[in-house]
Length: 51
Ligand SMILES: [Zn+2]
Image (cartoon, rainbow, N blue to C red; front, side, top):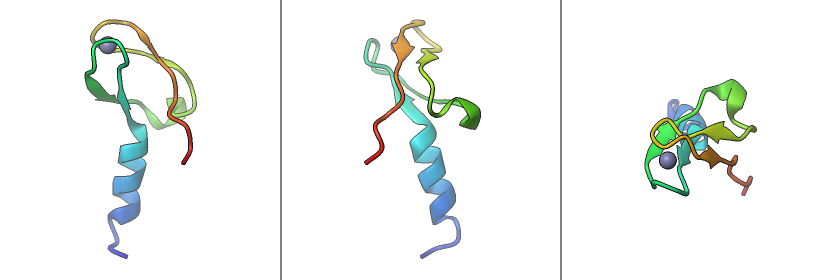
């Protein structure tokens, strides 16, 4: 496994796609399990389900 692979996985987990406007954005790590407001349209974006 490449050294940066886990960092990429962490970033992907922080990536959130707004269900309303469809824009993707990163959330801060401390908010990764919380619903966050969309930066663009202020809609609530729920945390992704763990796979
Ligand atoms: Zn949005």
